Image 1 (tube, rainbow, N blue to C red):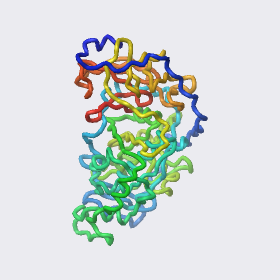
Image 2: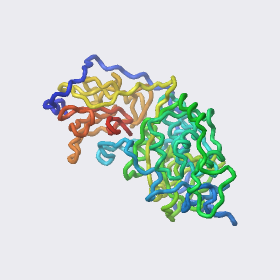
Image 3: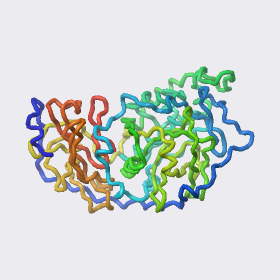
Image 4: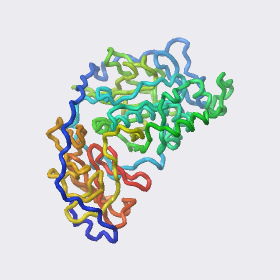
Length: 474
């Protein structure tokens, strides 16, 4: 791939040039402690599923739609939201769409760490408790936003799940993304979760036929005063969502190693209660599939053992579930029951961010120059073939194998790869610090010529389209 590809680029303007020497990133601070490998069994040696206690019924009594059931957590019955066509979140037009699929441009999973646990990086927000409400989609969004903010500031936020839930407050969870993406979210301290109020917002017709309305009522309206107050003082903005098409467990490992959490929706058995040793509690394998109700929660790590790979679940059923609200799930179990996977991006609206602001877009550069992946100016490539990122060339020697330093922190490196997609005409050239793409005009929303260039830094090295904008995703 070279500059000759855009000689016939038409009337599009050439981006400004920066021809000075690239900067070197600061050395990373002391790395967080390496998480230990949990003592987990192979699939065949897992303990049995905890049985449903005698007399406990999973019928709809918590305000969810008829046809959606509850699940036993090990201590209580929690309502499941309704699935539509087997999906909870569905797909929205506002989602970012990767322009190069993971099967064409994939990181080397053999170079990824054997264990990733975002708790050890201090990047996981609080473990919340949805209690008996069918609001797991709002809780998973809040958890993912908290984590995304930590990637900017080094410290997770604690956003208001009530504000997120107030914007759609229905077990028909496909409305969750549409109602929240692009908006700010205030702090939990300003509007903490209230189970009775949250369930009171459910529409009366959403209750199962023949059941009496709960004491808290139904069809109530969220407090306009509180929504206005939080709307004026957001701590984070939910900027973007990426839906993963047909993800496999290697895709999830790649994203988690890049430092990102992943929201997943699963079909659940009647009992979803962890078992096993303290510090290594896991949910046992199950086989039955329920197409009507599902559960949304967050994956925040993985562990590649000698004969098994497990993923770490960050749930919203309180700290008495599993190990303080976390539990492991075998990759076979996760793959069998995974319905959806999506990645949320969010940015802090208050001071404290250590990441440079991003300028995304498609550019025209003169021969042998490529766009800086953050500034958008045209610069020479780095010695390893990476695009510069905010004027910086990567240093791999600062980090463990498979990682690279661009900003003073070690992140998952982009793969050393080049190629093209015959279906779209998009071509790419990647090295540890990121990828540069040659995009036909029709594939880049802001490209005015026949061909333009775009660059993406590690670990968000995959170019994507979000509405009328170009962006970069894991």
